[in-house]
Length: 286
Image 1 (cartoon, rainbow, N blue to C red):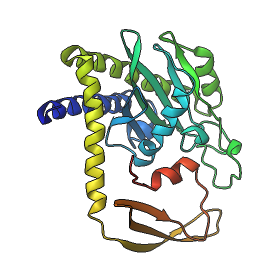
Image 2: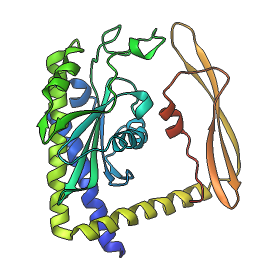
Image 3: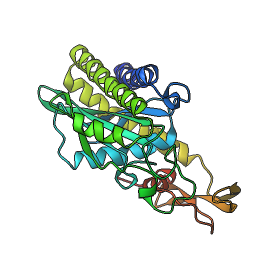
Image 4: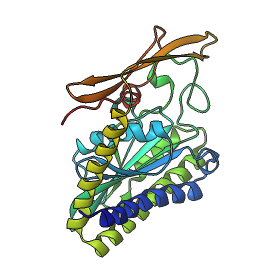
């Protein structure tokens, strides 16, 4: 694909993700989303590869591929939207509810629109669903495994009601979920407009070209890093017991390729598995 066409389509895809985010921020009820903008949006291809992302929350975006993979394992169908917040299936913390919607052309899934938004309360042992003293996941709030929240283009009210009933701010939850669903409907319309203008074959070719382009740029950036190790010291507060963690980064050449890995300290800071993975970036030969 020539560079001009690639840039045109790349920016068209990016505009979809950015308009999703803008619509979500404008339509939501909670200040977490409307003012703090604690939300993220992205577009994936049919194979579950992230193609574009809005310039939003890095930890949201880094964990999204695992969430899309978890949904794809459940055989999603056109006309559905799936919800999850389970940290062991691509979620982050429980207040971050992720929606994944297949986008179909002529009945076949060609992309996925994804949104993740921080909901102000999803239950648990304390308001806000981020208890500092929790020792197990169920204390933090409602755990949502991959679940259909829309079926045949119709909202599954039973699922929505279940999520809302587990929140201390039920009306706000309903409004924020409605805003997320609206941004997915917008993404589907915009994607169909791009396909109508450029053709599905060209759109799919652009997906591949963008992934290849991103890989080349990433490899080039890592190749410029000198071999060596660097360390930093950070202080965290939690449970009234200060945590001091030494953290380092190693850059090394492995069989002609570069690797970039994180090295943790002796003190343990409990996070979900996918946050550890997205914070460490291995670059390997395919």
